[in-house]
Length: 121
Image (cartoon, rainbow, N blue to C red; front, side, top):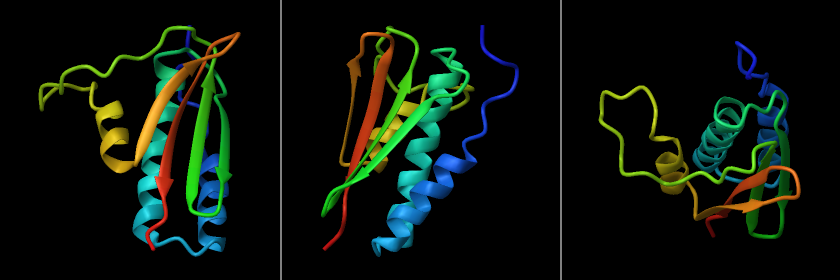
């Protein structure tokens, strides 16, 4: 059972913004990364029931990889685009549109959903 309110993701967002800002990434790319992180973070809470999703952000020379771990072994499916008036169903489509790559991998307990962004040259 999930908590009635989503967990606070402000620390993860701040750390991501600080990491990319200090590396000189463009503000629009930073915003894309923040929105993609938000979608994965909320999905881990809403669909996997994880009270405090674990976030890992790694910045290699030209690629950012953000991983969000949750407690559910159920792998998400990229469904057909949702009805424009539906209340949910667009999150993974949004992540796919905002990032260069994304995916999901099972863990011993739960799964990790991740995305990657390449810096513009």
